Image 1 (cartoon, rainbow, N blue to C red):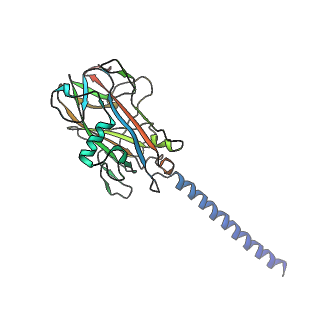
Image 2 (spheres, rainbow, N blue to C red):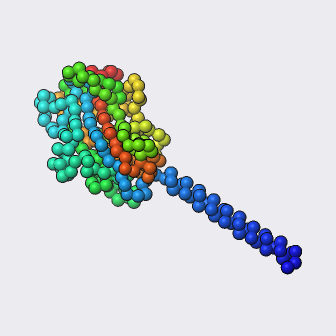
Image 3 (tube, rainbow, N blue to C red):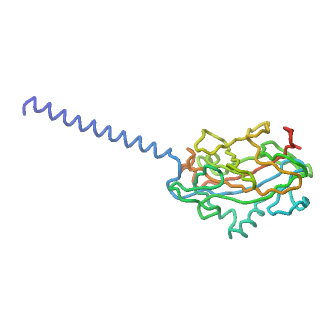
Length: 273
């Protein structure tokens, strides 16, 4: 073999090696992209371990799973898992433990779709969580979520809003992928949507987060308004936002614990009561 032929064969082998290196590099990049892409890719979803709704402070604001008209004595200051389970059994023949959260997406906090665009129904086999309740107040007021502690009518401490998970890391990152919306009857437009641990905007739906310290009550966390002794139906929805960058395989099989605390702010005031 001439020296010239040897050089040509060597260069050809070198070009093949470079092509292989480039190909493997592309595969590696695609692998990294797939690992961080939103939406689950296998079917092991998240569940709701505990859900509780509380009125944080004062006698002026109350809530119930049923509409009792203006008889405020029939309303209470807390909605528990047992109350929600009664609602789910009556309307869906299931309990909170049966609700499995499959990633969905929403642009209004009221209607939802799966990744392929198919409409999702509430409290379905693999879907999102939804229930209805009724708020009433002894005076005109605005209702807000709060992270601040309050006291009940017996002066017992009531903890503020919190979304957590007892699942081990990295499953507990599920707290970064969920949303909770509040749609009050008579309010047009999008539902008010709480995004715990809010990151960058990922859909057209506007969301708000809450501070861990002192609250500032303003339009961003004002959920709805009440007129004196006039009950208002509010639909609460909890879902995993498939477009969220944290909604990936590592959070599958996680459990969520949700505590929602509400305060009533009198018109023209910035403090509860």
